[in-house]
Image (cartoon, rainbow, N blue to C red; front, side):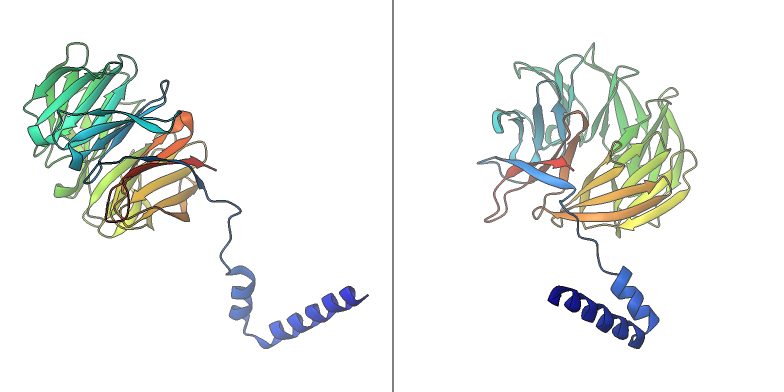
Length: 344
């Protein structure tokens, strides 16, 4: 009886309070409180220490079958190889200078490293880690992508080009020029377009890999600093991370029409689209992974900020293993490490 009386009194007092408050205040009390998630959208699974690795990290790649992660330790002039099952580093590759991009191709068991410091693309045996060949003349070699349909490797480099590499012959067979140094780029699997972030030109370049040339471009003057990029091909959406101001920009990948933009944390350098959960993971050097929920192809909502560490702006989403890796650099008391998360 006392419990029932207490509940009744609480309801009565709450009702009187609501009658005294303005309507907008009542709405805030009822609807405006932030939702509390039962669990974070990314749960930390393991941390892999990288002792004696100094400087900043750049991009990552993965061997899904072998459960290995390859990390371009740009400031350390090395590529660190992580065994994800054992949760430890198993190899350090030397002989690279300021490695920026890494790409593992399972079909041929080859590891490609963009060695920007000596203007080369280095090709390693994926099993023995033996250096097989070094392709020179690629000034400031950066991001690397594999075209599974065409069986070719693309490397962004220089003041504005993608080098086309034939993996079978381990030779460069051509270039596609553009207006500035290419940052992240994405290839259509069902078409011939390559979408390229060219921040110096404040543009997204549209390249046709059949014609091997630029066929158009979309202005990014309203959103400068366009570095990372992901492609949601099924919904025809291009997802672009920008730094000035820090926002996620969503474009129609067929027309370039702006669908919307969502504020994010500062200093982003990698982003990935999780098609199964309709989410976007954006690693930012400000010290967060921003998680954006795709409610529909035209509606995006900032879901959560996952605290990481200062300078942890590069990452990799291993879709097949359901793991998201974040590279944390050594800064004073902060140790160099790779943090492995599981999407929830």
